[in-house]
Length: 191
Image (cartoon, rainbow, N blue to C red; front, side):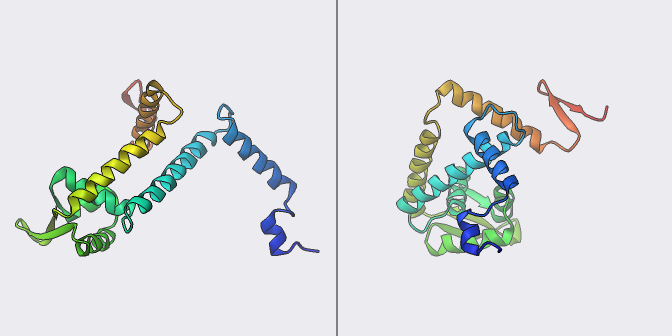
């Protein structure tokens, strides 16, 4: 007889292979020294997910109605005062239509204003309003707390080493395929 959906959800009827794979994944999570090549990617993914979840929860509690995307827009505008809408979409790596929708909400809330770009009549320059300043300060406070939480359990030296390693990994991932970084220098892997 085939297992019911409830039994499958409860995990009562699992294949032996599934149990073995689940056990290996669990061991890899608990023992970061394992040689499983997926461990680093899994740890990065799970750690980032947990950090985002915690940050989102704190953000909703402190600033109801704000989202991470809206906060990113406000922070960028606070750092650069005025910004072209197209350039901001590129920097945030979001589609222009997505940015338009986010800006619509921020504009209705009174945090952002759009002004015609004097150099391009099809474009807009974005600027913060005075109402956005206390929100931006709250975002900065939340970011400082989140950074402190991320350092929980590791020393400043370890945090510095982690930053350097993650920066190096990010640099490698942004290089074109076939180009390696060896000792800080680029090398074409096809030589």
